[in-house]
Length: 119
Length: 119
DNA sequence: CTGAATCCCTGCCGATACTG
DNA sequence: CAGTATCGGCAGGGATTCAG
Image (cartoon, rainbow over all chains, first blue to last red; front, side, top):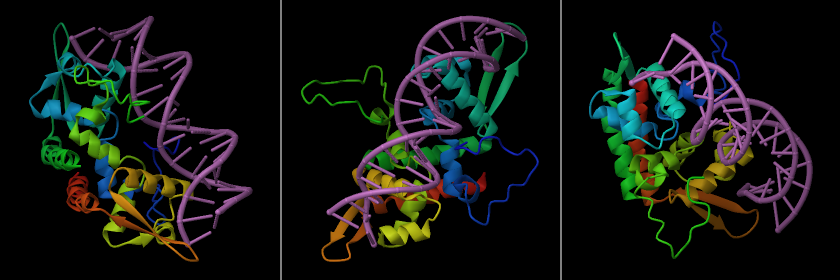
């Protein structure tokens, strides 16, 4: 997150009064927070085209380091955009699948792309 | 970063092959780059409601430091989203006005907000 | 194959102080 | 009123290495 060094696990935080954290009180910022990070949209775009494994994504997006890719995926999973599906057996295979919410990002990216295109 | 250190006007640059900079090749990232930075959307939202002076914005968005606010405004001006209108005389007054492109961010923020709301 | 751990470096962001 | 200057902290992100 932006900062606030360590989250209080139990405490409600309740910053409604001063709105110190924009992400908590502002829907636009919530979405931007999900999409935050370089190339995150490209990861989502790739998954909008179908399920992908880690290696699939690595090959499709060579500009992301392993760490960056893993970070993006973990963040998107935690945001409820992706689901991680581990397949048993060897070699280990993991499929990343968009959730219902994740699929709704399609139109969002479309709008973002349209505006950026017209700029 | 966002852009290459020093643009060589003559050299083709031609980064299409590797696409090292997402902002340059990806319309979605262009838009996200414009909206980058904490509370940037709130600044735009505020200006969508009408022209504002620096002090107006400072009062409406007390969570931004002067520096942060000045940074956002400068960035948005450079992105072609805002226009800075200095008025002669004393005391100095500066009005920030959305450009045509800037006004088109209204629907974009709407979509972002809708998605974040539904999450 | 799918990541997690580490290191380091960059640049964002906040606070304060100061100028035209 | 409308900013700029400066400093410092801390998280983000890249490269490499290691583990399940």
